[in-house]
Image (cartoon, rainbow, N blue to C red):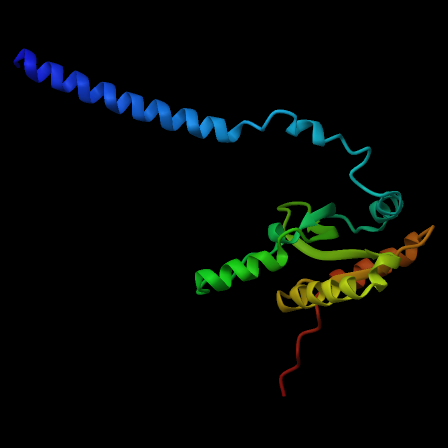
Length: 179
């Protein structure tokens, strides 16, 4: 190989290296938060509100064996868009469930598959926007055959009563009899 060929190869390699280094620097620069940005955050004192913590304590004792719960699960982690949607339909459908969550998700302990949802309804659920959100969430759960229980928020919960509601919620629907 001639000296000229080696110089051309070295020059091309140097240019490629400079391009890759520039792209990496730009990408890493975008990932780093602007100065002072992290000052906008603080640690939450608890993942659950006092009302949710109170309910969770009763829920623990009301679940049948083999059932666990998670709190504040994003609907996007429970439901996904169906195949066959156009990109626009997929984006619209995803956006409808983005930033929404269910208060408690009951799951099968063995494989964490969703069994039912529980919404703890406080006075905010009486507001018009919240009623619209609740109607959408109710229909979403219904359309995907996942039961959803609404429990009015209160200062205390009856564990036996909650156990009966949860067992009824998790009971498979009766098979339709053949005619």
